[in-house]
Image (cartoon, rainbow, N blue to C red):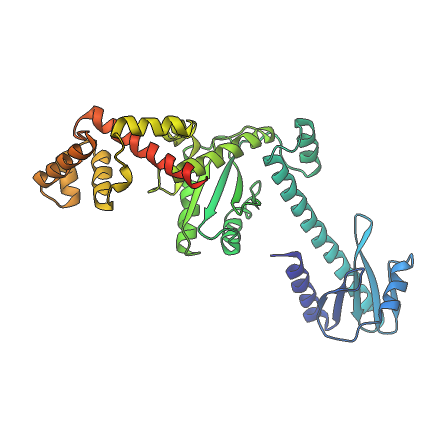
Length: 361
């Protein structure tokens, strides 16, 4: 909820309780909230009050109030009503508006601080100093989650993720420039790192079922203090990128679970292309149809067990043998042997990486 929505709800409640009408203006005269649609005093009278030293003034049934944040006037509140009680109600409303403005200011400051911290824009001294000023615990284990949805900058998804985390203290949700949602989750002292996968799964399931949008989550290992956040932010970015390239059937990716995909991601493109040429002599893996690729995937998942793979695919064992013999003739590798299956698994990952790199050119 934005500050404008909060201010409107607050002044509408004041109107319901007191029976008075309120108008909240910026110092430039722009209306933020107007509960009654009454005629506002002209701009000259507003400016005359703002230039005075007084923080409030009553003129007939009009009551003027200045609203401050850190000694700066941020709003002009006007209340319509007669008598001392109307002025007192206006003063109470001012107190609440100032508290709301301060709360949203702190929230915004923390958001900007976390973004700059993740991007490595602070020295360790600056990071510690700002954290103290904003009352953010410096020495505390945290992990970073990056949430990507099919539709970039999905406001509905952002709101859902915020609702999942902001109700708990110590968590921060922000949206970076690329449209990816960033969650900084504070971890309990004895929280099992394996629980990070559960958190990622919860976010994906929630967005799939409630926001009706596919989602992918990459997450980091834990950092022991704020100084470590830029490093684990990079880990979460790597996890999301590498995971989507090499493990397309999954939608949650932990940095410490990337396996050989992370190794291939570090290789130069020419080395990967040379490996594919030497292994398949110009025959492309892109010619594999979906059924064949699915057969290979299930065969690998079952540790090269032909009988179990045939059972899961609802085909006869001999039919499966025939399919692998056709693959052997085409690619020169017998997937039923450990060495050739390992080479083929590696080639699938390398081929996915080559497609990704070429798509960036």
